[in-house]
Structures are given as C-alpha cells and as structure tokens.
Image 1 (tube, one colour):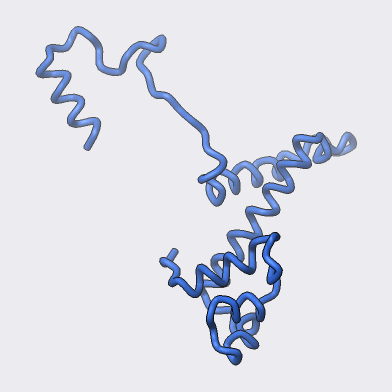
Image 2: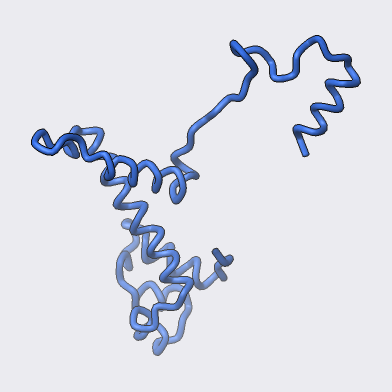
Length: 136
C-alpha cells in the first residue's frame, strides 16, 4: 500500500472517525482536508485508488470487530447449523492482518521442553556465531 500524503491522511481521519462531525461524509471530509470544492463534490464518484484501498481495509476491519463482539457474546453460534466456523476464521484472519496493530499474538520460540534454542554445550564462539546467523 502506498504512503498517503497529508491531505489523504486528513481526509481519512475526518471521514473514518465517528467523533468527527464530518464522519462518513465524503464532501465535508474532503473540504476539511483541503481539497478543492470540485474534487470534494466528486471524490466518491472518482473513488481514487488510495481511497478505495483504505476504505476497503477499514470496512473489513469494522466488520471483523463487530463479529468479534458478537462471538464474545455467543451470538454467532447457530444451534441448528453449528458454530459459524468460517465467520470465526474470517474474523480472526482480518483482525490478525488488517488490525495487527491492535490484535496480535505473542509466540515464544524455545527449544525442547522450553529450554533455550542455543544449547549450553556450545562454546562461547559457537553461540556467538549461531546468534549472528539467527539475527540476520
């Protein structure tokens, strides 16, 4: 995804922030970001790539977060059809990828039985060499 310019960032902040009085309003958000009136009037019709990419990501993340709330409340379960396995998987995938700043998993890598990956039997020189290789 391309880096956004300051106007694009300002537009998205205004458009996507529920606390903004321009929330969800293409024209107002574009005007606040400093776009011309003509561009602001047509931004939703033109749907430039930067906007399409960022709105798609936000829309998916919002849906996934809503599914997460429903799942935590047990409302995604359908006793007649069983749990909604695909909805859970899609929600998990979306939160891990698009929402990775807020939803992460910590994984520790260890050797057998939780021991260090670099066994103590190695010489100091061997441990340093191995450590260098692992950090590259």
